[in-house]
Length: 606
Image (cartoon, rainbow, N blue to C red; front, side):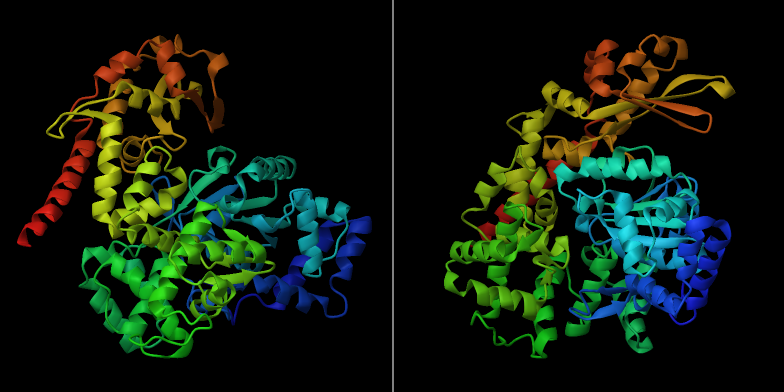
């Protein structure tokens, strides 16, 4: 772990520049030598270390050096557990994709990696946030602009030299934050740099299942969820007082699974510590934790006790402000806004207040309260942005939960068009279990399967099976150097499945624990395609979706439905779906129905 006091000294930059100058000739050498004149090296070092300073949910508007709070998450590559430093080393050979879900610290990890590149390698780290880049400007020009900004002014010719000779580490943050229509453009730009400048180290961060995730030019690294040991070490990093550290770690070790199961990301751990510091007691469940978050952030603003309403510019009470925030989050999510201009925010705040019968003339004051009192929505340049996507998604889900008379309409409306609302549904699963199970999960299973009057699954619908295969690849491999025949490797669902229950329980997902459906289907496919020569006759090279090679092994990727149709195997594969294959689905349905019944039974006491 790097230290802010002993690492990143100006002398490191001096040595990098001297090393680059030794490899340069002509005009390139003259440009590089200018970097060492008139105290420029110290400015360059200071500018490159600015990547360390970030705003966090605990510091609100003040920037904090991430080395004061950063706890390095473990990283998973297949069955290996690695560190962020390992990613740096491996990215020399193959570009790296750092994959993580909401709050896992992708950006913080990449910023730390930028400082690591500065301190421990001969390369100059170029840290760029993809969402802030103009698509009309080539990526190499953005690199040149970054270097100029940190006082490493250089010509296009020198930039090309630095990239070609491995003097740049290109760190690109937030591919998943790009608008969908711009993603293919940036995939092409990134691949062009990788192809043209093979010595340039490239690391990109993204959420799972984005356009770039499917490109085999990258090696995929997954940020691992925090476990019990991680949580203890994370607390030690955030809580400075040893007595408080031990008290919180001790209480957390005895807490119920409802809380500990939630604390799997650095973001949630930071929020948890904030709630605990405010209440001095542990939340009993994940819903209580998020419910307490709002009042915790309010009380941090003015020091008032949680039980009292604090003055707001809008004049709204705490309860009204929370309801308005929930409505705002829902309306911004419905409009697909992550970044919101002043005009858009005022319009949508007016809509949000009208939806819950609060005075819409107070929209500007309400925005001020959300931005300055809760600090959950902050101005970023010319736009507003929630401090984290999960905040927007959770309070959007809370809005749905609280609409007792209308929530069924939400669940029914998006039963077959749920993809946009996936984050909310994952929250609603826990914070609105009755509504979620009754109006969404059980109906989803009934669309997926034939179910009798006793709510027993009779069979998996063939149309549902076809839908799943249409968004799935089938992958084979062969190793000619070892004389190994072509053989089946696995099935991999590459997109969302149209049915929620199928996507949740039945899809063939890479790098995840196998479900009963995947285990059964892959077993049947493997049994049928064991003979290499027999398999080869089904492999039409013209229909290969993609092929790539790792060492001596060649991988062939086909569209699963097309391949299995050509092999006349779909009907046989469908008929193999028995109760063992549907075990997880049957269990999920029974658990949901029993839960709904238990809530109905409680009503008998009245």
